[in-house]
Amino acid sequence: MVIYLDTSALLKLYIHEAHSEAVQEWVESQDDPLPVWDLQQMELKNALRLKVFWGDLSATQADRLIQLFEQRLRRGQYYYPDIDRAELHAAFHDLSRETMRLGCRTMDILHVACAKQLSPDSFITFDARQRELALHAHITVLPGH
Image 1 (cartoon, rainbow, N blue to C red):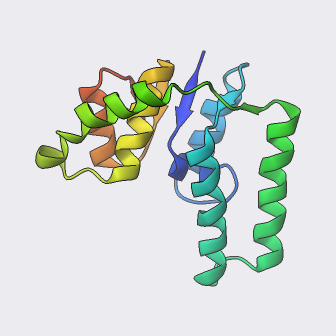
Image 2: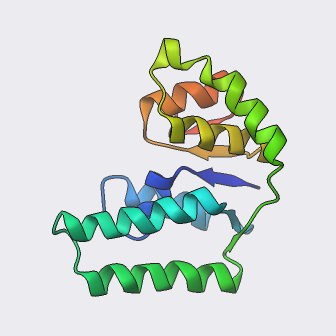
């Protein structure tokens, strides 16, 4: 079973926020490693560092959480999926047309385009626009609304 986490959902595995427990339960309910591609890694690390800027974490705490992420990657809890860049660009092009209807952000479209390529059993997001875009791409979304 493949679960794709958008970066805000992935962040909930490292920072206690609303819905952190639900994300943890979804992740623990599967045996397979989570796909985490380079965009998610960059976004996660920057989100943790942004928490330092906003005063929510110390630099030491952010560094430790980044190290924890990297340890999990090395231990095989996450894996880098093979992403066909041409396919990603084509999916992005098609999905970006929905921006006129949904007001999608670039990163949201990239996540859905990547997930579409990976054919996950579930796409976890708490963003309403991204959720609608994933549903448009015929991807099952959690949480269901």
